[in-house]
Image (cartoon, rainbow, N blue to C red; front, side):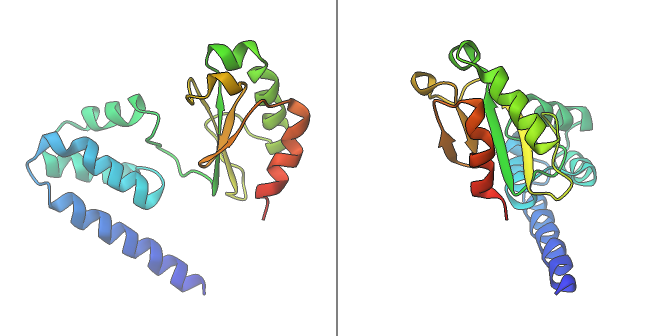
Amino acid sequence: MESSGCRCIVERYQEVELFIAQYAGQPAALITVLHKIQETLGFVPHDLQIMVAETLGVPISEVYGVITFYAFFSLKPKGKYNVSVCKGTACYVRGANKVLARLEKALGIKPGDTTDDGNFSLEVVYCLGACGLSPVMTVNKNVHARLKQERIPEILTEYSS
C-alpha cells in the first residue's frame, strides 16, 4: 500500500512536468503553470520552481515573487484541511484574534504551519467575502460564520479523522 502512495506522488510529479513542458518559452503562462502545480501537489516545491523558471524563460526570482505574492500558492505542503481565518476589518472587530488564538492552541501550530500529522494547516486571510457573517473562517471550502472561540473544538472535531 505504501508503494502505491509513492507511485501516486511520482505520477502527479510527471503530470506536472508534462504540463510545464507544454509552455516552454512562454513566460506569460507563469500563473497558469503555478496554478496547475498547486492544484496537483498542494504546494509549489523548490525543484519545480526552478524547472518552471528554466522552461518558461523567466527569472527564478519572478517565480518566487508570484508564489509569495498570491495567497493561493504555498511553498510548503498544506494539510488535508486548510483552515483560513479572516482578519479583515469586520472579522477583526468582532473577535477574529480570539478565534485565531483558540485555533493556534487547539492545533498546536501558528499561521503558515501544518500539524505534524498533516491533518490541518492554518492561515490568516484578509477577506473571505462574508463580512456580514463575521467573524468567519473556512475549512477547505466550508464556511463557518459568526464564530465564537468556544466553538472551535467542536468544529475541529468535525474534521478530525
